[in-house]
Length: 515
Ligand code: TNX
Image 1 (cartoon, rainbow, N blue to C red):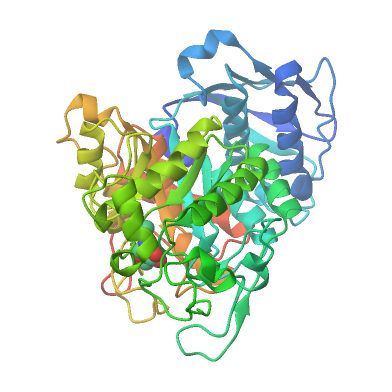
Image 2: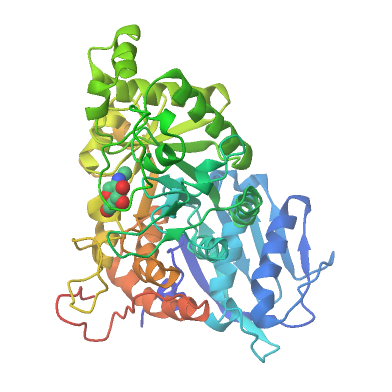
C-alpha cells in the first residue's frame, strides 16, 4: 500500500498531506464563497474546472467552497497555502493571493484527471478525497525559459504552456524574444526590428524561410493571462551578443555599420555583436523602456552570454570607448556594457538578470543565471549576487531525454528525467551564506532543433514535472515521484500534452532510466 500522498499523486509533492476518510462532492448546486482578496482565485477555479465539468461554481455567501486570505498563514510565505477538504466543506486559505492560486491547482489535481481537460465530460458529480494539506515552496523562483527567437511559436501555444507551468506551481515563464536568428518583439521607434529582423531566409541550409513576431497587445494579454495563474512573464532581450537580427535591421548599431548583415541562418555563436557607442546604448534603453512598459515583472533578462569580443578590437568607436571609460582593454567592454543597460533598469525600479559564464563577469546589480557550470553560481553567490540555477548539464531541455535511437534529432547530449530530478538545485557543498543567495531554478528550452509546439512539448514533458518538484519540494523522493508521475501522466493526457511517455512500471527501451 503506497503512502497516502502517493495515492493522491500530487505533483509537486506538498509539504504535508494527511488523508481523511470520506469525499467532498462537487455538483451543479455547489457554490463558492470568496472573500475580497480571493476573487481572482475563485475566477481561476471556475475557469479551470468549467470546460470539462460544466459546473458553474457560482458565487454565494454560504458556498461550501470557501477561499480566503488569512494573515494567520503568513508563516507559509508568499506562495504557501492551507487546504482542508472535509465531507461538507472545502476551505482554501493563504496569506497572499499567489498561495490561493497554487491551492487552486492542488484542488484540480485532487479531482479525477478528466476534470482537467477541455473536453466536456458527461457527469454531474465530481468527488475529491477528504484531505488536510499545508504546503509551501522550497525555492521562490521556479522557472522555464522558452526560446521563441530561433523558432517563432504561436501566442496561443504560449497560453497553453503557461497553463502547464501553473499546473506544476512553476511561477516564471522567461521568453527568449531576440537572438541572431530572429527578433520577435515589436518596438515602436524601430519598426524594422520585426519587419526585417523577424524573418530569415532559411535555417541551417533547409531552404525554408522562417519568421514571425508578436504584437504588443498579444504580449500584454499573455502577461495578464499568466498573472491570473500566478506566473510572471520575464522578457529576455539579448545583448551585446546574439544580436545579429537587430544588426540586420539597423546596421548602424553594429561595429562596422558599412557591412550589411542578413538575419543569421546558422546556429551557434555569431561574431557580429552590438557596438558600444552612444547610439547603440540609446537604442538599448529605448527598447528596454518599451519592454518595461509591456512587462511589469521586477526582473528583465538582458542576455550577456556568448559574446565574441573580436569586433571590438578593430572598431574605432569601441577602442575610443575603452580609452574614455578607462578600461584595461576591449575584453572589459562586456561587463561595462552590461553595467550601462543594467543601470537603466535599476533607475526604473527594475532588476537585471543575466547569463553568467564565470560567476564574475556581470556587474554587482545583476542576479545571475549560471548556464555553463553550477560552480559559477557558487562564485557569484560568494561575491554577493543572487543566483538562479540554470546549468546546462541538468536544466537544458533541448538535449534528448534518452539515448534511444527513436529520440527526435536534437542537440548532442543527454538529460534524462532522473538527471533533472536528482540535480542539486543548491549543492550541499556550498556554505550557508552562499546557499541563501540561490533564489531558484530554471529549465531552458532552446529551439534550434525543435521547430514546432509538438516537438517542444515532447522535450519539455515530463522533465518539467521533475524540475517543478525539485524547486517546490524540500524532500527528494525519486521512487515516490516516479509512481506519482504514472498517475500524473493521465492529467497531462487530459490536457493534450504531447510529452514523452513515462512509466515507472513498464520495461523501458534500452538506454533509458529505470525507476
Ligand atoms: C547556449 S545558454 C546558448 C544558446 C543555445 C544553447 C543550445 C546560452 C545562454 N546560450 O544560445 O541555444 O546553448 O543548447
